[in-house]
Length: 71
Image 1 (cartoon, one colour):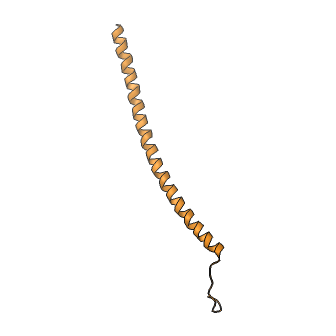
Image 2 (cartoon, rainbow, N blue to C red):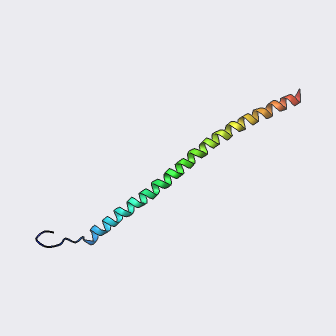
Image 3 (cartoon, rainbow, N blue to C red):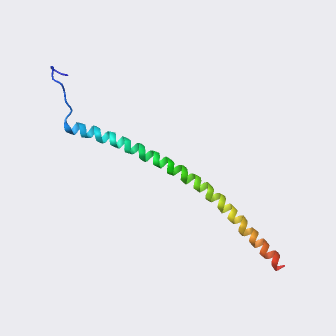
């Protein structure tokens, strides 16, 4: 207080404060969603690599068996 008068926030100051709070909350939610999505993407990438390796092995095995049948 200055000179005995209380300072009240103007409507624009309240809306800025409110928007800042909402932006921080939205950012936190977006960051959490990104982290979860990133973890899932990494998990799927590892699974995909594993399945690609298995697929290559199976394709080679089929090729070997087909060659054995021809002989």
